Length: 435
Image (cartoon, rainbow, N blue to C red; front, side):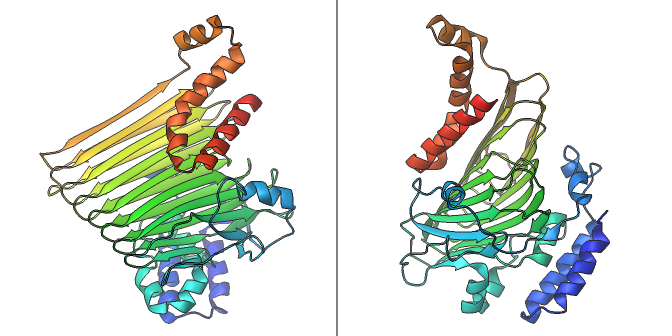
């Protein structure tokens, strides 16, 4: 059974052949030391008490080994061809794919592409930006990613520039007969008055064998920057997906993220946003669909550090089979963050008797002139609504699906791309019909 020492040994072997700047080697060294000190989290850890990673710890993963031959029909479906246009940065089994990527003309100074290429083209900026929001001191999976990442995607928009077309970052995984591990690293930077729309997408092409994607995404936003972000997780039913997303916003910036989680055997998403300036808008929405014995855990944190900021958070879960969902959301308001307006809501719909949801919305407020609310609901389909639809000649299964779709539509419609919203609606309908 692999343990922390095995990962340290792999790191030592890989570092002997590494050709990279000394500062990056030191960063990786600190990260592996942090990982070894912390170890994999257990349910004795407060932040992991509802989610066991024992199955990850006991799996013998090999490093993802580059691009296999992927059937084109599956590629078309996985890359959402037809649903969105714009720029695509694609990876297959951790390796950048020229064939699947498409990066069109960009404004002066804008970069969209591989993180490793950004590092070569802008070494000073790369050193200045990498691992400045995602820390490794108290985050073992982020530490593991920082030690081992090989590549990932980068979106850099300089001051006053904007990307008019959507940037679609997609990671495809096909196991090729053995369990694999990859550590995708994404860096999204918008300087002052910059604007972009980004989709972050994970797709499993193999429905049987396990694999593990351990992701870190860092977002840095300057003053008055605007970022619309969607994370779409469609991993295979046997996959492990652990993701850390750290966002830092400056004054008057506007950030909106929507997380749609559809696949995976064990999924953990950590979202953390720091509102480090005045008059910031920050929106965090999410929807997860789980069935069978899937386990999906969302931990969110929004830190209000300065006055006059607004945050809005809505997460919804739909659970079937014997699945389990976890929502742990925290809004933190510093003592100087007066005039804060923060709203947090978690609503969950249980479709079967055997499902479990652990919901814990939290407020920690140290300022006295604020408007903060939070709440959670857990329930089943509305009996009166079902009766109303049945009375109008609609079959029971269709009536249940209609009510479930209506429950999810608030989050789906917020994704911002009409064709993609329709595709997600079709995916939800298919999921309900299969259930």
